[in-house]
Figure 1 (cartoon, helix red, strand yellow):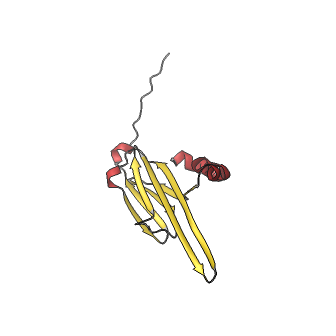
Figure 2 (cartoon, one colour):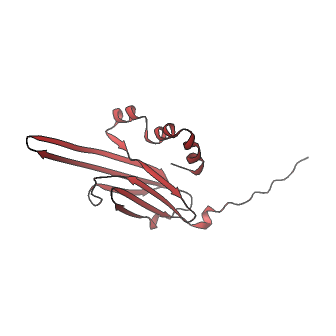
Figure 3 (cartoon, helix red, strand yellow):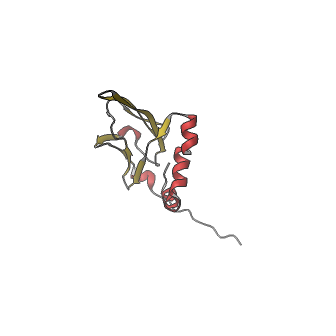
Amino acid sequence: MATLAHRRARSAWPEMFDWLETGFPTLWRAASETQAIRIEDDLQEDRYVLRAELPGFDPEKDIEIGVEEGMLSIKAERSEERKVGQRSEFHYGSFARRVTLPAGAREDDISAEYKDGILEVVVPIEAAARETHRVPIQRKE
């Protein structure tokens, strides 16, 4: 839920705002096995672009993107076992992130692309919905 003001404040206290969005690390993992997906986002004139770090995932099997009531949700889950000789390692986990879409987001035109471990989601925005309107102020005496 990164608004422009939120992003500016985030530069002063980056870790505090990350915790607010993703949950305090120890409490989050204790309450749930779901981990937060690290993201960066950019609000441009005609689109909102979100990039999520999801290395090692198969986008067709492991990643799900959904939109509901102005919220974009990304969920990813993987389970992998590697065996080398007598040794084996497990890599598994559930990851999730929800962000509020900006005003004017065209939810039916969202596109996503996965390349080199980065999921990029592009949400077109209607320019008319983002315009600000000046409100006249009347002086009272």
